[in-house]
Length: 220
Image (cartoon, rainbow, N blue to C red; front, side, top):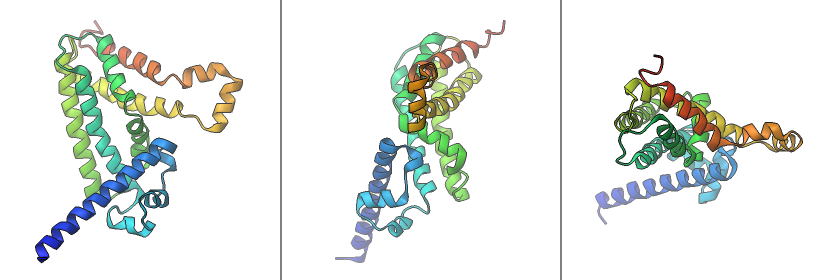
C-alpha cells in the first residue's frame, strides 16, 4: 500500500472519529443538557480513552462550540424551510415562523446560552473566528430571507427580530428545563410553572410582538 493511500485512510479515519465524538456529545446533550456533557462521558460513549479526544478537540469548550456552529446551519435551514416561497407575510405570521424554527432545535437553544457564557471565550482566537464567521454567514442569510418574506420588515427590523429570537430562545429554553428542585417548587406553586414551562407559547408571543414593533412605520 502506498504512503499516499495510507495517509488518505488516516485522514478519513480521523474525520470519522471526529464525527463520532460530535454525535456522542450531541446525544448526551439532548439526554442530559449541555451543562452535563463531560469529556469522559463523550469518549466513553465512542469507546475512547479521554486523553484521545485531544487529537480532535483541544477542550470540551471547543467540542461544544463546534456543535453550536453546526446549530447555526440547522437554524438557517429550519427558518428557510418555514418561510418557503412565501411573500408579504404579516408580523404575526413571521413571528410564529421564526419561533417555530427555534423550537425545533432545542439543543441549539441550549448551546446558545453556553456560547455566550463560556464557550467562545475559552477557545483559541482562530477557532473563535471560525465560529463567528459561520454564525454571521448564517445570520445574514436569515436576515435576507425574512426581509424577502415579510410584508413590512426592512433589514434593521429583521435583525432586531432574529437577535430577539437568539436571546429570548436561549433564556426561555433554560427556564423550560427546570432542575429537580425547581420541579418540586413548581408542583407547590403552579403559577410559576405556567410561565416557565411554556417555551413555544412564550417565544411565539415575544417574537410576534417584536416583529410587529420592528416595522419601520410602527412608531408612527
